[in-house]
Image 1: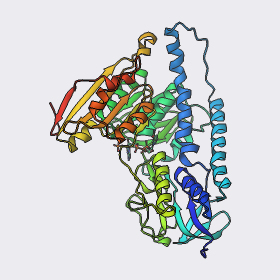
Image 2 (image 1 turned 180 degrees about the horizontal axis):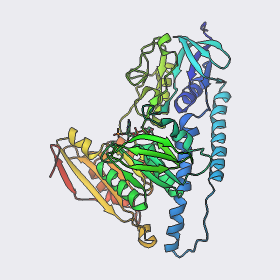
Image 3 (image 1 turned 30 degrees about the vertical axis):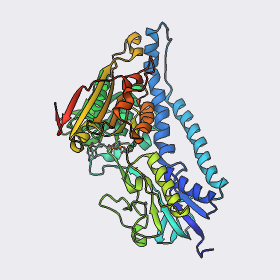
Image 4 (image 1 turned 90 degrees about the vertical axis):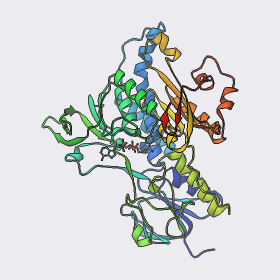
Length: 462
Ligand code: NDP
């Protein structure tokens, strides 16, 4: 028995924190956990889960249109934003309950409070102003939307936090950023009938993705009617007397919209956490610095998930939590594995990807074979939709290993998850070639691209 109140105290009840706390408690550890907002964290409460529900909601407008090509007559349609928000709230409240019960059923002590470090073993629970001590502490406080306070008029703008719960569906929205959140919300709002303008500082949206995915999605979004401004940024936002927002851009555009949403990245949530007092080191961005086992500069304090700014994805935080459990409580030192993480952008069409882009691969491999197929999906033939699907495999010519797989199109995320298994297993292009096609499907293209579309030799396309 230690002299501490808890074996483990977890600060932050999101994906990483809840997993670490719940599993440690299930192993018989005395666990306390504190969350200042709602259990489930960003992913469940105002991130991945409600986002995906809204993606489904927004897809119906195209489903109704497509149905007509297949002989259906769809009657008058209308959309009720408040009904969607209420249904979403009900679902996330249900999920929040599951997270909380998972902790309680394993006898973790659950606090609804902000928690701050006092020293390396002491945590202050802000709501009760009580301190508790713990042998080990896990910090899993996640991230916060970059509010961009240097932008004049930033206070008039919303982030994804507010976008889920607006009082009314805006008629028009200007979204700043070219990453996951900006692109996903641009598609959601467009699908719900909102006039959307996206403004991005770079030449092409989704800077970390393969260029074919970026260009293909950009084109599809513009064809749908989403306005995309590139190499431009908002320089000011003013609120008019009638409540409309007026944004001025660097390139001289004036955009009037009901809402302006900033999706300019998320910062590690470390402000006021008492890291100095405990001696926990952070980097220039405020992210907690950790070693390969998620241990901070303080021996008994670990950090998991977005607060460490490694890879800002829910499954990564959960994986880091499980590695922490293995290392600390199962005597099995385990480093999180951040290689070959499958990921999706839930745009319309979707992007699903695993491994590296063609551009990135060109920097690491002497010779690559690129297999690329672009086609009209079967459903679009009769529906009349102009959508194209793109599939791409990047193969290291020397080892024949597939080092990147990229898909743009319906259910691309689902496909990327499955291809992720084979890439993780070190699959070669020959394995793809000897896999029988499943017909008729879109995914069969992945196993029927027999000849390279082109090669990349020493970074140059030949
Ligand atoms: P991202 O990092 O994906 O994108 C941020 C965007 O903002 C980039 O386009 C970036 O440009 C731009 N940007 C950053 N700073 C500025 C600035 N000062 N002025 C103008 N533009 C700027 O962040 P998000 O906010 O979209 O998402 C946060 C994280 O959440 C993501 O990294 C992702 O890991 C996670 N997420 C995952 C999802 C999923 O898995 N489907 C969905 C949503 C979020 P540039 O590219 O030029 O740097």
